[in-house]
Length: 278
Image (cartoon, rainbow, N blue to C red; front, top):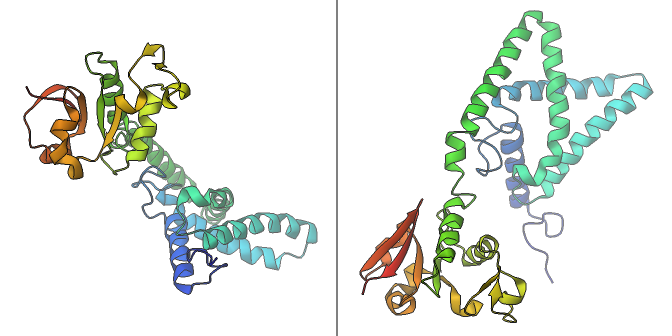
């Protein structure tokens, strides 16, 4: 069996190696935007103010390592430098690495950033209030963003509205069947919506396996009869007959695919609880 092309060492590809190297350099050293929930875009994983100190720390530390004559001290320095090289190696062999996949590298990066700050402050003693102020302001802005705009924007990535909508739909006893969209707002994934539904509705394993009609202390129709995971764009023509007297949990953006009259039972964030209008 041929090894996957994205693993450079098993099926060598200069193109893939180049992509891995750029992903490592851009996300770790330049702190360019990564996956939304890996770091806040405006601040990066270490605050953008750290970038020059990281480069200065790595360059000077490496030079000092090879100039050091004291074997014991050089060995100590080599441990940190080896940690950094290990992190770089992991980044190069990991498919288009992101921050989460190469988090090992941030331990030596933080230490070398501190080393770079120490170098700068020792050389320019008046610089330390500037550095302290820069990090202080960055911290204040970070926490201000984290608990406000970032918290609001991240709701969709953690599927808060979807889970609240499904949880509410599951408590409505007038409906034996729930028809749940596979649209999470930021991606379409019916498998993920089923897993999230099972989590938020606390579905018992025996009930899911069809060995019991009781789940979370409630007697319900069989799992396959109660919970349906749909693709509104592909199944639009069939939905009116499928839903019948059931309850439809729909992402607002999918309303364009609905060609029948409906009643809105409730709205939860970006999701609607709908019934077919009689």
